[in-house]
Length: 255
Image (tube, rainbow, N blue to C red; front, side):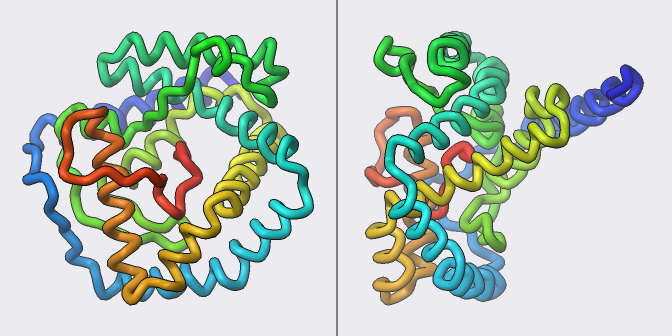
C-alpha cells in the first residue's frame, strides 16, 4: 500500500472518530433499565429471518463443526481469532482512559503471539494476563453517548445503535488491517467465522432455548442482549440484573 493511500485511509478514519467524539460530547445519559424499540415491527421481521437462517445454516454448520473438529483444535482457532482483536482492544482502552487495561491486553498479546505461537495457545491467562474485553461501543459509552434504539440486524443479530456504530468503527480502525495483505485478511475473517461457529455450538442449549422454546423469542433475545450488554458496560457497578451468559448471537468482540 502506498504512503499516500495509507495517509488517506487514516485521515478518513480520524475524521470518523472526530465526528463521533463530537456527537458523544453532545449526548446525555438515558435512564437505566429503559428499552427503546421504535423499529420493533421491522426488527421482528428480521428476527424471524435470522431464526430461519440459524435453523437452516448456522445451527447445522456449527453442530457439524463442533462434532467433527476436536475441541483443542476449535479452542486454538478461537484463541487465534481472539488474539487478533487485542490491538484494537488496546486502542479502545486508551481512548477510555484505562491505561491499566491497555497494558494488560498488550502484555497478553505479546505473550500469546510469541510463546503462544500466534495466539493458538493461551499461556498469558496462566500467567495472570487475562483478556479485558472491550470495543468502541464501550468507548462511546465512556464518552457519554446515548445507547440509542434497539435494532436487530440480518446475520449480526441484536444490537443498539451505539453498539452498531462502535462495531463499524472497530472494523475501520483495526490497526492490523493495513498491515495485512488480502490473503491474510481472508484468514482473519475465516477464523472469526469459525470462532462464531464454535460459540454457537458451545452455547447451543441456551441459544436453542431462547430462539425455539420461548413464547416470544424476539422479546426474550432483546432482554438478554440488553441486560448482558449493560452489565458488561457497568464494569461491576451495582445493577438490577445479572445475566451469566453472553449475547446468544455473539461472536464476542466480536465482540
